[in-house]
Image: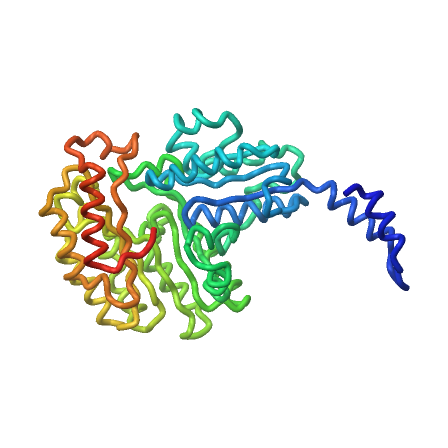
Amino acid sequence: MAASAIQNNVLMLNSGPGLDLNNYFDSIKLKLRMKKIFIRNVGCDRRGLDAARLSEYFRKNNCEIITDPEYADDIILVTCGFIESREKRSLESIEKLNRYDGRLIVLGCLPETSKKKLREIFSGSSLPTKNIDEIDSFFPSFKVSFGSIADANNPYWDNLSEMSGLSPEEVKGLYRDTATLRIASGCNGKCSYCIIPVAIGEFRSKNVSQIEKEYLKLQNKGYHNFIITADDTGAYGRDIGLSLSELLIRLDKLSADDDLTWEICTLNPCWINDAEEVLFMLIKRGRIRRLEIDIQSGSSRILHLMNRPADLKSLTRTILRFKSANPVLSLKSQFIIGFPTESEKDFEDTIDFIKNSTLNCKGDILQIIPYSDMPGSVAHKIHDKNGRAEIARKYEILKRTFSIGSY
């Protein structure tokens, strides 16, 4: 509706004493002139933090964040390219959102991990995660740069309900007293199945003083539960002369009371040994309530091919030690099934590892990911692949054997 029409309608109403119509209509005109932005995230939780930071970026530049892409001047889509199902979802979202009149800008990992597929359906603006600061080039009139926007402490809300399978009320309840601390970005890992490092860039630890400030600020806001995360959480500090253990000790000392709890996410087993004693102490005291370890296979041979070598016997002992330290600890683990050359014995080794490490007890979360043969990965070049039917058979066996969480 035009501003003049709004004004004519309102003037017919009883304005009442003290109502400043000039200011009212100035605000209406300003709102009509504001650039309207629609943001959608179909990526992981870390990309959800990027989307939340983007939302603040647009608000600081006097834009209006809207919930319907039909009325948007610009449509921001944050994508994923980790596995085939996430890639497919991202590509379908691009095709759907590109039908609207607003300018579509594709961000996240897909612009780097799936360049060819992206070019086949989209010729517009895009940036990979590692270059997200360059979004300023798409908005030359903006006064506030993206680089000046502080990191977000909760993922963007837009479609968390849709992606998680929870109701909107359940999602809001989940984050009511929970905040996220992102301690680093990027990944220097060389996992043979993964192409995400090319999209997110080199590993970069956040300055420890900045993390401490965020932690204290969030406590003052009333948050009691904290998700400590990164693309490779266990590698924290390796590039700045610190370690994850040192960071956790510092944050523990800054905790206002014993009721504050943490969830440590995305731990590669290769970092567990260095942090074991500190993790054990914090688990025993109840500070750490959930630990996420991305194990990926119970077969030493497959882990070697994945370029994620681990002493599985030692890892089992450590996991059991953690569980004995605090019976309410929740362990979240992740496994990939159907990796190239995975034999029936390798598959059975994974089942045995899950059982021996008691990774499917009440309160635990077991994620099973069918292998995705992503072009550009080292594993893509390995012959003797498991077929789709074979991978589906193995997945069904695991579903019958364990309680499997969604991914």
